[in-house]
Image (spheres, rainbow, N blue to C red):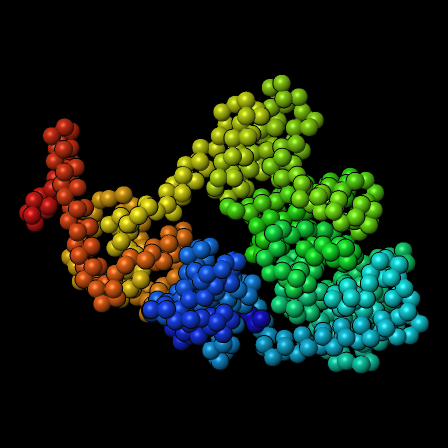
Length: 574
C-alpha cells in the first residue's frame, strides 16, 4: 500500500462509476425481481432470498440479518477487508488506479514494487518447504515436527518449511535488495550480508488475504532465541497481524469464536486436533488493531494464557488494550490454563472434547475483571471498597458508551455498596439508544421525510427551494433532522451509495441505513409528490406546535423579546 490518503472526491467518483449490481453479481449471483435484484444473503444462512440490491440507490440490504451498505461496505464485509483495501479492490474492479494525496513525511512505495515483494515471499516460502523435504537437515526438521505430532497434511496447510543452517542460502538464490526489503537478509556493519533465519523450522505468516508478509522461525533444540520473527517491513507490521487467521478463514469465514493463543506451535497443534479457530499474536501484546481485526470475523474472542504467574500477568496486561475496543455485540472471555501446561500440551493430555469444553466455558471478562480486583479485598471494610472503586473506575471509563459500560458500573456499585453509577455514561447511552430507535409500523413524519430524501437525494433541491424558517421548527429529533438535511445539501450526492459513504462512522450512520432501507410502498413515479406532501405537512405541524407552545407560555409566564418576535412572524404568515 502506498503512502498518502485516498482523495474523497475519488471515492465518490468510484462509487458513481461502479454499478453495485455488477459488483455483487460477480461475487453472489443475483436474480432480477421487480426493481431490485435478489439472492440468498452471503452474510447469514437462509433458505429463501432476503438479500436485495437496488441499482437506483446503489445500495444493498438484507431483510433477514440487517446487513446493508454501498459497494465499499459489501467488499469490506464479504472479503473481510479494511476500508482502504476495499477501495483498492473496487478500483481494481473498475480498472482504474487509486490516486494518493502527497504526504511529505511518508515515503511512497509503488504497488508494483509491493507485488514483487509478495511474489518473492512466496518463492522463499516454497524454497523453505522444499528444504524440509530434502537433505539430512530437512529430515531432522521433519522428524522434529513428527515428534511434536504435526502430520503432513497440517504441515502443508500451514506451509511449514526449514531454513538451512547456512549464512547465504537465500542471498545466493534471490535478489539481495528485495531480501533486505523483506527483512530476510541482515546487513552487518562491515557491509557483509547474511540470512536472518538459519537452522530453523519456518512458519510463513500470511495476512487475511493469504499473502505471505513475514516469517517466524523456531530452533530444533533449546538454544536461544527459541523463536525469531521477521522485523517490521513495508509488508509486515506485527502489531496489526496475527498468525493463523488466513488458515482459519479457509475453514470458515464466520467462526462462532476465535481462540487467541501465544505461539505458532499452539495454533498448529490445535489445528492438528481439529480446533481450526485459533490464532496467535506475533510476540507482542494484544493491541487495539488486533482486536479490530479479529472482531471483523467473530463477535466472541477467547484469550488463552498459561496459568503460571507470567500468564496471569500477561492476561491482566491485555485488559488495558481490550476495554476501549468492547463495542456493542463484542464479547471477551479469559481462559487460564492449568499450571505447567500450554494449549499444545493440554489438548494432547485432555483430548479434543475436554479442551473444547474449557474454551466454551471460559470466564467472561466481567467476572474475571471483578474477581481480579476483589479476591484479596475485604469488601466489608470501607477502605477496601474505596480501593476497589478507585482502581476499577479507571478501567471502566475506557469502555465505549453503551449497555455493557452501564452494567459494569452497576456491578461496581453493587460491590462497593455505594451509588457510584456513571450517570454521564448512562445518559449518553440512553440518548444514543434513542437516536437509533425507530417506531414500529409506518415511520413518523420527520422519519418519512428523511427516508424519502435518503432514497432520492436529488429531492434536496426541493428543500432548498422551499421557504423554511429553521428556528421555528420544533419536534422530537429536530436537530438530527436538520443535521442530516445539511449534510445532504453540502454533499449533493449522485445516489444513495455516495451519500452513505459520507455517513460512514458518523453518529447517525445506523439510523440513516435503517431509514434508507425502509420499504415505503411508494411507486417510484410517485415519490416526489409524496415527499413534497410530507415536507409540507411536517412544516405545518411544526409551525402549529410552536404556535401553541408560545401562546401557552405567553399566558402563564410571558415571552421574552426573541419569543415575541417569533410569535409575530408566525401570526403574520398564518
